[in-house]
Image (tube, rainbow, N blue to C red):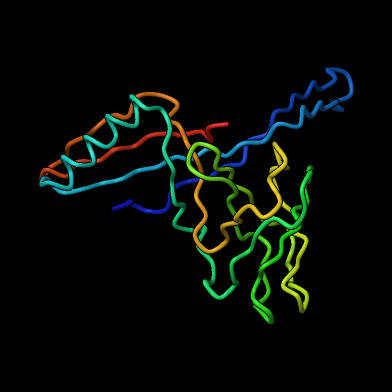
Length: 189
């Protein structure tokens, strides 16, 4: 069980250099964006705790895992969207296959593209209402890192993010034999 919600942060590759005389700052944005999570999971002393310990030992060895952000789920009535058009780049993703008359996709919702080790996680930046044919243009962050194939699945209902721990995953045992695991993980890109 996850203790509380994981903390999600969108990191940006940029640097600023303030002037010592005026305080004005010049910022260089290098364009890179990635997700970072602080995750705490707790389990009582039983098979679940041992299974979690084994899972996290395997994650440290393998280095990457798919994480279903519990805050990222949306309505399952949106249809089965797919990428609409090849060679897409930037911060807009054209999709088709949304349910006719489907509800508005609200700003702040998430989506994922790709499968397994190629999964990419994005946030939708503006409200979207699909047209009568189930087409929509989604404004997203971070921008597409690579062009998805035409017809590739777009997961909006239960998107996942591909993460890797930034260090070993410690196991703590508290009174009552409650095992907890707290760690930071970064999007594996």
